[in-house]
Image (tube, rainbow, N blue to C red; front, top):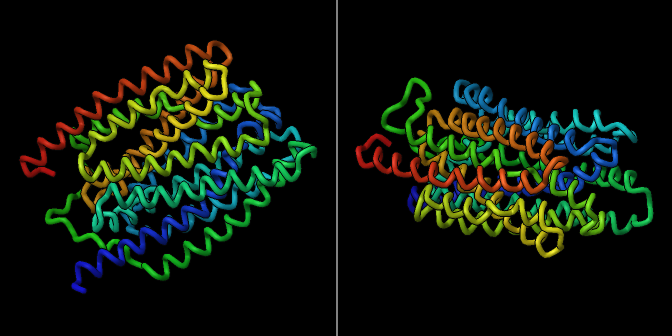
Length: 407
């Protein structure tokens, strides 16, 4: 086996191991997410508060990534930020079990703490993965990572469903608290596996060769600017699943104990679509984002306007397609556009812009929900569709620069 094959094999092993870390991490916080909207509603939060907190958590979690992205590029301490963020992120979820009845403010604080911890870890973690991804195809590598991630995202809600089924007839709020406590088990496993990955692969940056010309600082190319504009539109119109669980619980379209299964279904679609669009990305590049956005854009009217179970399930599936693209091809595009030495900054800028727009969109959608669900759905669809021509412009600019040798 030649050196190149050995490097590719080691890089693939790193992707798999970090994917297993993500599996248990997502088992923890996606399991929690499957009941969070209904839980906050039981704790006394209104629809507007739930929309505000969901968006605020995303904004905090994403906006701080700008700072931590630049800091990671400056210090190159990729593992330090990854491990530190993971520890707080993982343990904030089981802490929800300590929230008393009516303590929705305490619950909201823990949600925001969890999102802030993600800001610490995400630019560093995604950069570590990008180093290995360059060896085996960026789209495919991030898709494999997302597949393992989403296996955990399916398992977490299913486990909670079984727990709620076993506790059927008990107080719902107490059952939800018990679920959060159980999620402490995969949270601890996440930390153990992460420390194992660090010991086995102390320097993943060695997977990717240095670029010929190092930049003194991050430079915003026109292709990257248009890409950021496109993901901002996408994020603004993409409604958080917390709103979906809250709406479903209020309308009674499915039983409360079945909510985790609804989210598990969305995560299953997410996993399959991530693999599919990741494979397409390595063939067709940024253009794939136009297709995935078009497919997922119409989930809101199916979920929030139509009042039938089939529409709810179809809308949830479309939502899962959008999430699959978001978690795989969006990251692959950053890896493609941004050079190695500035990539944490690129991820930080990308994630910050995404999070701010997610916050603004979620807040608006939460307010509109109580005024006009039809208006909320219409805005969601229109803004997402507006991202498609902007993705195309980014693609054309990137190809033009690549032809000139500027990428």
